[in-house]
Length: 276
Ligand code: PAP
Image (cartoon, rainbow, N blue to C red; front, side, top):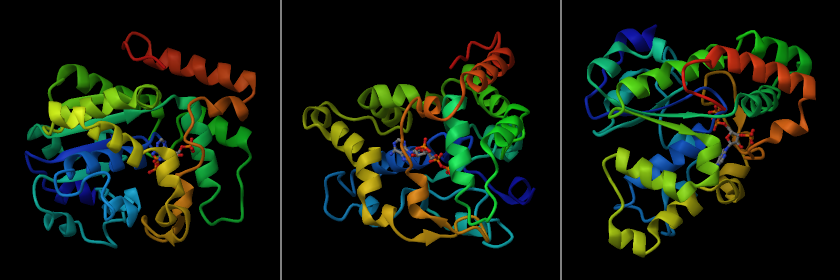
C-alpha cells in the first residue's frame, strides 16, 4: 500500500518483474550487465558483479519493507532506473502503466518454481520445515507469496499482448536453452542493442558467461555470508543459487503431484495462449 501510494514512477524506468523463484537474480544480473556494459565491460576485473550480489545491484520496489527503509531512497537513483518487483500487475503502482514504463517479465515452469520455493522458504532461519506435500497443497490452492502463480503469469502475459512495445515476456526455460538469443533480445528491449562490432567481439557471450549460474554461484560474494534484504529475515547469499536447472521438479515431485499441478495450470491458462 505504501509503494502504491508513494512510489513515483518515471517514464524511463524499467521494471524487472517475476513471481518469486522464477529467476530474478539472473535477470537482475543480466539487465545490470547489459545496461552498464559501456562503463563496466563484462570481462573487466572490477565488474560490480564480482563484488556485489546480483540481488543488491537492482533494488526491489517493495523490499526491504518500506516502513523500514524509506521509499525515498529510490528517488535518489539517477535515470534511467532499473527496478525490480515480485508484485503482480494488479498491485503495481498505477504510474507504472500510466507512464508506459518498460516491463521485463520472467516466468518459469510452475513445477520448478514450487520446488525452488520450497527449498528457499525452508532456509529462512526457522526451526520448522513444512512437509513438501503440505506446501504443495497450498501452492496448488494458489496460496503463494504474491498470489497464485497462474494469476501472476496471466496478468503480465495479457499485458505483453496488449502492449508488446512496453512488455517483454520471457520464459526461464527458453532463456536457459538459448541464452545468447535472449540476451540480445533483452538488450534491444532495454534500448541498448548490441552493435555488430560487439557481436563479432563476442560481447554477448561474455555477458552470458558472467551472469551464468555456475559463474555467479562460484563467486565468493555469492557463496558466503548472509544479508537481510527483506526486514527481519536474513538469508544466506548462497540460497539464491541452488541448482539453476530446468526440470529439477522431477527429482522432488511424485508423478501424481506433477499431473495435478499440470492440470491446474492447464485449466487456469486455457485459452490464453500461454503454455508451459
Ligand atoms: P527470489 O525470488 O528469491 O528473488 P529468484 O532469483 O527469482 O529468487 O529464484 C532463484 C532461482 O533462480 C533458483 O532456482 P533453483 O532453486 O531451481 O535452483 C536459482 O538457482 C536460480 N538462479 C539464480 N541465479 C541464476 C542464474 N544465473 N541462472 C539461472 N538460474 C539462476
